[in-house]
Amino acid sequence: MSGRAQLMWDEAVTGYDFGPGHPMDPVRLALTRTLVDAFGLDRVVDVVAAKPAGESTLRLVHREDYVEAVKAASADPAAADQSYGLGTADDPAFARMHEVSALIAGQSVGAAEAVWRGDVDHAVNFAGGLHHAMPGTASGFCIYNDASLAIARLLELGAERVAYVDVDVHHGDGVQATFWEDPRVLTISLHEHPRTLFPGTGWPQEVGAGAGEGSAVNVALPAGTGDAGWLRAFHAVVPELVAGFRPQVLVTQHGADTHFEDPLAHLAVSLDAQRAVQVACHELAHEYAGGKWVALGGGGYEVVDVVPRSWTHLVAIAAGREIAPEALVPEGWRQEVFARTRQLGPGRMTDGRWPVEWAEWEAGYDPADRVDQAVLATRRAVYPLRGLLA
Image 1: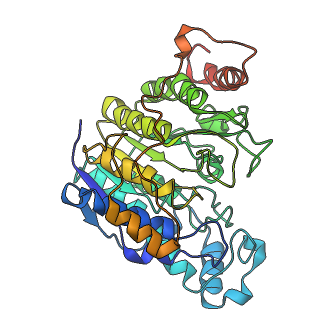
Image 2: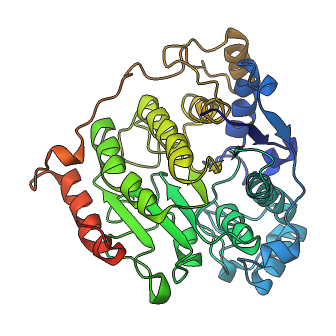
C-alpha cells in the first residue's frame, strides 16, 4: 500500500511568522523538515516546491476584497484592516504576509493537482492545514485556507466526490463553511467540544444545508479525552462515512494539538494515537479513494517535543516507510533542536504507548460515557441523512 509520495516544501514557508511570543512558531516547520531529512525520507519521497497560489486560485474560496485586504496588510502591517480579522492578537499582520500565505496555499493546491493527475498517490504539505480562514476573514492563526483551496481546485479539475477528514483539536470551521451546501464534499471534523475551545463551533447538529445537508459531520469530544476514547470515536464514525461516500480523493488534516502536552487545548492524546490515526487515514485512502491522499498539517503548539515527531511520522507513512514507534530520534537532530531553541529534544519517536488499544463501537456502547454520548450525537444527527443506521 505504499504508493508514490511527494513532500511539498519550500523553505520560504517558514516566513509565516506572526512574531515573537505567538504560539504559531515557524520553528515547528523547520524542525519537522530537518527531522524528515534525518530519517532519510528525502530519499524515498519527491521533494517539490509548488508555485504560490495565484489570485484566480485564491478566489476559488476567498473574496476579492479580502485578498486585497491581505495584500494591503502585507505592504503596511500597521494599517491592517481588523474588520477582516487582520492585525488582531490571533492574526497579527506582518510584512509579506500575502506572499507567504499564498505560498503555503500553493503547496496544498500543488499536492492536490499532483494526486489528481496521478503523478503520485500521496502528497503531504505539513505547512498547510490552515483550516480556520473564512472566505472573507482571517481567523485562528489562518490567513488563506489552503485545505479549502486544495479541495476547490480538485472540484475545478473535475472531482465529483472529495472527503475531508480533520483531526485537529479545533473544529475545521473554515472548510465546513466553504462547502456547507456542496454535496460533492464530505467534511468530517473530530475536535474538542465547542463549549471548551475555540472556535466555539462544530456541534453535532451542524450537518450542512440545502443540497449539502448531511455533508458536514462533527464529533465534539469532551475535554480530557485520551487515546482510547479518541480512537474509538474516530473509528466509530470516520470509516463508515468514508466507505459510504466513496471519495475520489481523501484530504486529511493532522493538527498535532490533540496531544496532552499542547498548551492551547485540553485533550490528552499521545503521539502513538496520532500515528495510529495517520495509518488509518492512509488505509482509508487505499480502500475507498483509489490511494489518492492529500495530507496536511494544522495546529500544534508544543513545537519541539510534539509537532516535528508527529508530522515526520505522517511523511513516513505516506512514503510507505513507517518509522517504528520505538525508534530513537537521531542524535544530530536533537543537537540541532538545542542549538535552535535551547531545549532538549525528545529521545524517541512516540510516547511509549504503542500499541494503542480502544474498544470497537460494534461491541456495544455505554450511554453514560461522555465519549460515547458524543459519538451517538453525531451518528443520530447525520447518519439518517446519509442513509445509514445510527
